[in-house]
Every structure is written in structure tokens, then in C-alpha cells.
Image (tube, rainbow over all chains, first blue to last red; front, side):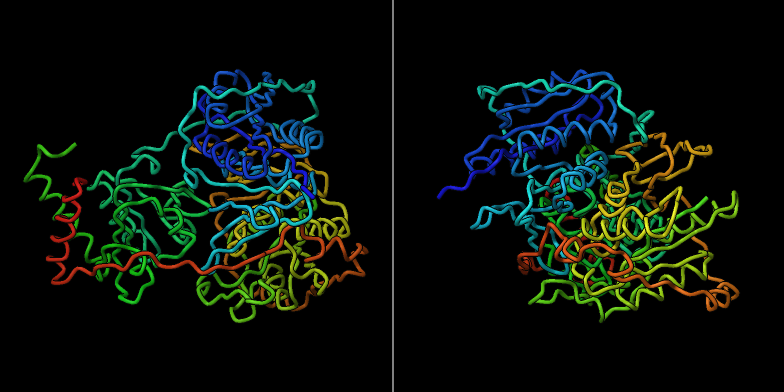
Amino acid sequence: MGKHFGPVWVLAELNDCRLEAVSLQLVGKARELADELDVACEVVFLGHGIEGAVPDLIASGADHVYIGDCAALELYQPFPYRDIICSLAREHAPEIILIGSTFMGRELAPLIAARLETGLAAHCTGLRHDDDKNLELQIPAYGGLMSIICPVRRPQMATVARGVFKTPAPDTARKGEVVRIPVPEATDMPARTLEIVRKPAAGIRLEDARVVVSGGAGACNPEGWEKIRELAQALDAGLGCTRPVVDEGWAPLHTMIGQSGKMVSPLAYIAIGLSGEQQHMVGISGAQLLVAVNNDPKSPVFGQVDLGVVEDCREFLPVLIAKIRAYREARPGCRE
Amino acid sequence: MNIIVCVKAVPDPGEICRLKIDPVTKTLLRCEVPLVINPLDKHALEAALELKESSGARVSVISMGPPPAEAIIRECMALGADRGILLCDRAFGGADAFATAFTLARGIERAGPFDLVVCGMASSDGATEWVGPQVASFLGIPAVTMVQEFESRGSDIWRVRAEWQEGYRRVEVRLPALLTVTRELNQPRALSFSGILKARKKTVESWDLGTLGVPAECLGSRGSPTIVSRMETIEVRRNAELLQGTMEEKAEQLVSRLAAIGII
């Protein structure tokens, strides 16, 4: 007896007039999951003036793109966004809803899951069907990989950070259908987004950096953290950190690397004074050369990198920074 | 003004590496590690206490957890909370974020009228951020997540600033509402000796399944849409080549290795 499955959904999102990279990555993953269930891959896309982005969604694997396009939806508005998505979900009964771990996704996903009375896994690093065609929502936890399933209720929901899945190669020959969905007249909005203000951070974006320097609690204090920042500058590297550093207030939340932060794939990743906790290390699994500096030779981080330096970072970094600068000065033509 | 602060007793993040998953029940074995207030919840409590001091408010702290979580609520009372409620029953155990939020929402309703619910934006152990917004859903009130600043506070319309990728979002919200807060919002106060003494005289109310009057199948593991189905260990992929020599020599080797792949 064949089981009947609903479509696989992705909520797409624009960031400053461009599709969020994670939206395309999720469409690519949803396409795979939909093929395994022999169902459609569908995208729900709300905003204003968003049609230009639809061909990319279809080229990445969407069969249907539901579009809610009006001025009132230009900014993320929790109430109409939730209501539109939930009523559409009640109509089409999706099997799965994938949502990017963006700031919108992180607020909207739990509101949708509560309204649909279903389960939601946070910041998954893997998604696959088990033998019963339940979606295993994989999350790193306590030194292992934890699989969460939502065995009874539907849809199965998950948020996923940018960079967990690869951006699919676009197939411009793919055909898909655009379905315009009715957008309700101005609804009562107990919470209303007035504006979204963008202040692009100075320096190199972590996601684009060829080299990432990442610091942990081993920096010990703000002065120690300053040395790590200096190293990043000397290498023209992006500067990331672990959760304890955010907790200490040395670096802002948006520079945190890992499961609930950013995923990076630089040519080289240099870990300073961090222990290699898994929630952090999943964020750098795309890096090519991994280097760690830690004063504890027994630190678990040394089991997860290619090159290790056993030194106290507060003493070692000034020496390393001086050597890097000397090297660059000796070969100025090589600097990009 | 009545303010509810949701707090969670979490295993001390400093000793998190001692945590283990029970191989049979696949839930966290919490008992081996001391419980502390979830660090972000301290910022939620601080926000409530500052509102109490500036505009007058009654601050109630509510938590769902095992009996030892009472100490965490007592600590909140020592910091200045007026009332403490612990939702504690075996039937609440094994709850995922959905069932936890449902239980907390029923507790908050039972605690009486409120204007504001404040939560930390995430917990340090479970690592979901869902409980706050889902509590708001079950209470039928608006939620604003990751609030980092209160811009203006009218009698029932507030304007807040919330974290957003590469910037911030300004939101107008009508009370009663739930806000989850980030650590940028404030600097939590430290415990005072007089506060500890005063809190000794206060009682923490403990509410069980009967007090909440909710069917047991809506709570705990039975009310949870998600379950942990499997734990796998992750194999370590790499074994570091440790650079040898003096500190100077190690730095030189590292520079040449980085130069070899063209990044210096």
C-alpha cells in the first residue's frame, strides 16, 4: 500500500532585493527530498516586486512558486506572513516545510509551527528520509549527531542555516508554474515592522572570506581578543568566534560560527583558543586547511584540524603577527 | 504593570562537556551538572527589574523544570522578582519546545493578568529559540524576537529595535506582548546579600498537572510533536600535525604553510 505524501515546501526570502542564498540551497535540497517522495517541490514567496527572483527558484528545482506580492508585504510582517503561509499550508498539506535560519525564519518558523500544531527542529545540519519516510532532522549535540523526527504530525518543519547545503547549479531549461495567491487586505497587526535598517559591517564578510580566523574563550580577556582581531587583520581574514565569546561580549552575535551561527567554507580556517566544540566545528566543515592554536595539547580541537600549534595564544599571536607582516613586507608584490 | 519573565534552569554552560545523552531514553541526563539560570534569561529578568524600578511593575518569574530548578527561581527573587512559580510535574518531562511553550502558556494564564512576557532569545542547552515565540502563539499575543533596545514605551504601544542580518529591525508592538531579548539590551545585575536574605522569606509556588488543569496528553513527551529518534557519534576526520620547535620556529612554519597555499 503506497503512502500518500504532500509536497515539499521552502519559504523563500529576499535580502535587500536579492534572494537569500539559503533560499536557493533549500530549494535544491527540497528537490531531492521531493523526488524521494515522488511529490512536487514548491516555494512560498512573499514580498513586493519579487517576481524577478522567480526564475532562479524554478531553475533551482521548484515546480510551483506561490507568490504573494503586494506593498503591505514588502517588509517581513509577522502576522500577515504567518497567516498567509498557514492558510496555504492547510489547503495544500505540505509534507515538509524548510525555512532558512535567517532572522525572519527564526521568528516566523516557530509562529507557523505553533499555529499548525507541529514540530520544528532548529538549525539542522542534515536532512534525510528514514526507512518509514519520516524526515530525520539532524542536529549536532553532545559530541554526536542527534536525529529528530516528527512521526505523527505534519508538516515536518526545520530551519537550516546558509551554507549547510550547496547552492544547486541552475537549470534554466526547467519549467515551473507561478501561482499567485490572494493577499488579504490590510490586517490588524499587533506587531508591525516599521523599517529594516541595514548597516553592513566593516571588514570582510565571513561567508566570502578566503581565510577565517576564529577565536574562543581561550582569548581570556578583551586584550586577548584584540590580538585575535589583529591576526585577522594581518591575514585579511574574516573574524569569527564561538558562543562563549559572544556571551562575554567581545564580539557580536552575527560573527558567531557554527550550528546556530554562520557556516563558512574558506581556504584556511585558523582556530585560536577554542576547544573544538561540535556546535562550532560544524560551521567550518567546508574549510580546506584547518589550523588550531591552543595551549592544551589534549584539547579536542587537535583531533579535528590539520595543523596544530600548542602555545598560549596570548604569547604566540604577537610573534605570529610579526612574522606574517615581515613575510608580506619582504614580498609586497604578492599581496592581493 | 504585570511582567512575567520565563526562565530556564540549564546545565552550567561552563561544564557542558560533562553532559551525556541517555542511550535508552535519548534525553539529556542533567543531574550530573549543576543547574544555573540560562544566561540570556538574566537579561530578560534585568529588563523586567529595570521596568519595575523606572515605572513600577510586579515581576513574576515562571519556569518549567525539575524540583532543583526552584533554586534558580529563588535566585531570581533574590535579584528582585516579586513572585516565583515553578511548573513541576513528572508529566511535564521530556517536552520539546512546542510542549514546553504550551505548558508555560497555561501557567502564565493561570498566574493572572499580564502586560508583558519577557524571555531570553534562546537557551544555552537545547539551542532552539522557539519557546518564546510559541508561548506568545499559545497566549494569542504578538511576539518580537531578538529585541536589543526599547526605543519608546507608550501605555500600550511600544517601539523596539530587534537584531536583523547586517542591521536591525524597528518594530511597533501592542501590549500585551512577548519579547525575547538579546544580551545587547542590558547588563544583568549581581546578587546582593540583602537580596538573598529577603528572598529567604519568599516562597516559590510549585504548580503541578492538577494545578494547571490541562490534559496530560498535551504536555511533556506525550504532547511533543518531535522525538529524538537516534544518536550517532561523529568520527573525527583529522589528526593534527603538531608543529615543533620554539615559539618563533612554530610561527615561521605556520607562515610558510599558509604561504604555500597562497593565502599570505
